[in-house]
Every structure is written in C-alpha cells, then in structure tokens.
Image (cartoon, rainbow, N blue to C red):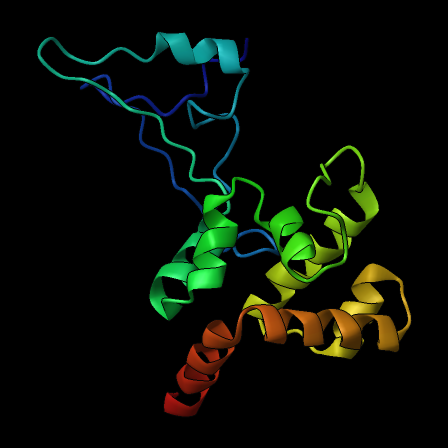
Amino acid sequence: MKLEKLAVGSDGRNRAMLSPFASRSGRNQPSNNKFIFGPSVWLRGLIKPAVGRSIAYVDWSQQELGIAAALSQDPALGQAYASGDPYLEFAKMAGAVPPSATKKTHPNERSAYKVCMLATQYGMSEHGLAAKLNKPVAFARNLLRRHRETFPVFWRWSQSQVDTA
C-alpha cells in the first residue's frame, strides 16, 4: 500500500507540498507518496473527520473554463460550461456537429474543440494550435474563428485583460 511515506503530522493531518506549477499544464503536482489523494482511490476511506466536523472532497471539472465564463460574463461561454461537456457544446454551438452529437458519436470533433477551447485561454496562436492538433494552419485558423464568433464577449474581455496588462 506504500502508506508509510504519507506526510501525516502528530495531529493526524496530512500536509504535503502541493508543488504548484510543477506540471507543464501549470497544475499542482503533489507527491503521490506523501499526499493522501495520490494512492488508490479506495484508500480515501481512511480520511476521517474529527467528531463534530465533516470533510468534502471536491473536484472542480473544467475549472479554467468556469473561471473564464464567470470573469468574462460571456453568456454563451456560461451556457457551454453549464452543459456538462463544454467542448462538445462549443462544437454544437459552432455548427460543427449536430445537436444530438455525443462524446461517443463525435470523439474527433470534441477533441479538436476541446484543445481549441483550452488553447484560447492561454493565448495559443493558430500555428501553435495547428501543431498541437497535427492539422493544417487553415484548420486551426477556422477553429479559432469559430471560437471568436461563438464567444465574442469572452474575446473582448480577454483582449481587455491583455491591454490592461
């Protein structure tokens, strides 16, 4: 089980360095040996709150997108986020897939629209997006155009953040 390396203090709490920005994506990357959420999922049952307290383990899905939708106040981006699958919803909103499309029926389109949606939040160019998707620049340019047309409020907000900086 390799639990002997968990960083548990005398108070019974697990405190491990989260290693912010340790991954290429900029996310936290704590040690799997020292952090209770590193080992197998079934071990999370070992986490017990003190009497009179409770614990919630929350995994915020598509966090960056939710933050972008809230800060930009783009209603279309908010709608995409609220759909549960913002990447497929973006493809639907852009007319790239039918309204009945699912992750199973249109995996390639969803994948491309996911990469595009995430790339726009980090300022990726059409050349970078084309390379990431292994597609021609014209394909990436079209995806970015569709994103701008679908989420214009986000793009105005994003540009204003760049201008302010």
